[in-house]
Image 1 (tube, rainbow, N blue to C red):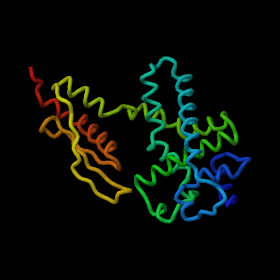
Image 2: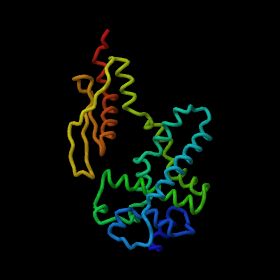
Image 3: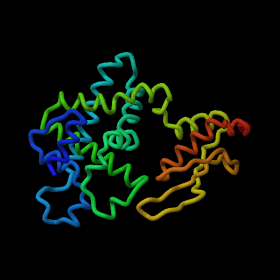
Image 4: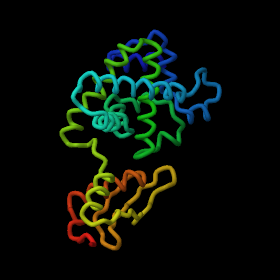
Length: 237
């Protein structure tokens, strides 16, 4: 097993002194259900640590490199960098899924379940690397694999919360708060897919899809902002 993980270390540019820490970072709890005698524990404690380390590294980077930006802007940028989608995509690029220790059932999963497992694994990996190699090494990996996405996030304004923006603009123009309704829900319980519509009273503004209601609502709000349908509704005097 160590030989397999040695390939990953070489690819990423790390070298763990304690190989068990690295392997444990990739051990999902479902694997232990099928392999109760496995010599290592699952990765949730490392994930807990990695989540805190990740947020600290990103926060410090933003604080030092954007001295003219407000707390609110930096908070939005940080939230955009450390969300499950961005972290999961980074883990996917690094090929983490090929090294995961999962149950047979979890291995068949995709979509939302796969993304969340990858994001959790990335955080566990960060926690393990922090314990093994210290802050400077883990910060360099986070900057290379995650913070490098920041220019794209800023350019495309991916840090903006479309639901908040739609609410502010629709209330300003019409005095009405948007309402979100689930139009369709399908898929098994562990991999639900939602289609959500957003309305001002009875007027349909837009729709969006996602692997969670929150994700679908954000997509619907973004659709409505692009269409600017709320401008057709006059504000009551």
